[in-house]
Length: 153
Ligand code: FES
Ligand code: FES
Image (cartoon, rainbow, N blue to C red; front, side, top):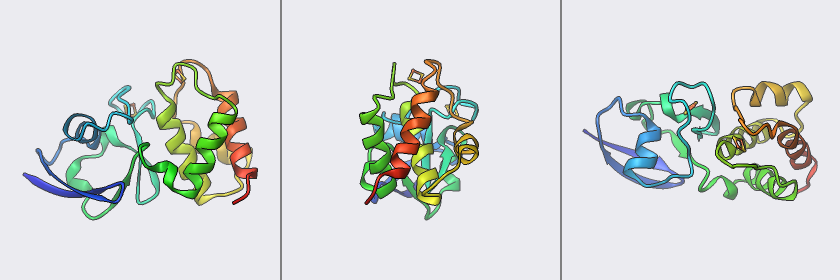
């Protein structure tokens, strides 16, 4: 069945079964491999994208649930004000180690900053607790979110 969805401001016609996860569509149908597969069960956060600005796990989001909502992925989050601040801070503090979890981390952090420009420690904990990093970059992630929150613009 064909679905019309909006990803990064572009319209895409996707011919897949309705229960196909958005993650599969992004990676396998559209070749947008910035969004990562980790667990496939909403446990790790590697597949995080934005739907209407909210951080969601694309591995458990079926294509038929998206409708007219706007999907933003790591490929375009840097065009949003919050995403740009987060990516700048990530580079400044050299947050990634292996990098595998990092697009999901950035997507969760950008959604947090867009909805809450000055998050407290516990706000950061709440927003980021579902994003696992096997390399243990959590301290740098936290510092980068704080730096992004303090940056102007
Ligand atoms: S791949 Fe979606 S949460 Fe792990
Ligand atoms: S940087 Fe390696 S898993 Fe997070």
